Picture 1 (cartoon, rainbow, N blue to C red):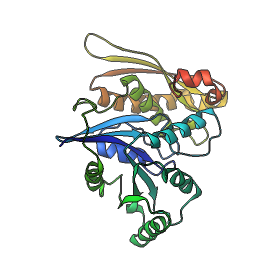
Picture 2 (tube, rainbow, N blue to C red):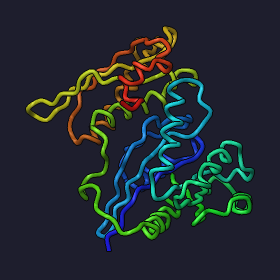
Picture 3 (cartoon, one colour):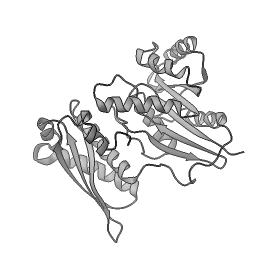
Length: 296
């Protein structure tokens, strides 16, 4: 019997959703950063086996929006709950249930989907703290089909989680070719890789006012890519920070991004980056649509 279905990983920002997805897929498809609200678009990745196919929708974390981009991110996350067969609700061993978690769980109650409670980052906590956190959740919410403590970064219990996901899937079709791992275009993955490097290297006040715009992406007869992209920021003062003294910061972002892009594309890459100021782009419906952050 061939089993298939759709899975979404949901939770507060920065609980490790993208890290888990990347470990499962073995590919850097969803950007990872220590800063919250890193994932902006829902990225579909596909895990195929001889008798199963799991299609993952990695959503932005649900949070209180402060601008149109935030509203879009929350809308996508909430909609994904209604469209999948299995919800992985991820949190960390914080013992107390936060208001953000309660908000998400109250929506999951009536979703009709199978819901797993996954406690991540157990390697960073004590067994007693993990046990107490599990007790707090399961005593208050009784709809979890499975409860699994994991470490997404270390891979602890991730294989067990995958097997449980397959177990809960119904008989279904093969939605995608078995050698396909994502439905996203190469340009989008390249854009996300560049944005990840900016998130990692820039200071706290800059990154979430930063976006990446691919101007052109061309391949020559030898297979080498030339990629031109703009890093967009909201303030003139941020532009100087992104460029850095003598262009040093922009050069570092470009170097690290190029290495990962070459790994992803399997080809040599000439990456050219510029910095442009687009004031209040996160509240511009036009710019958000141009950057791929709103539905048509």
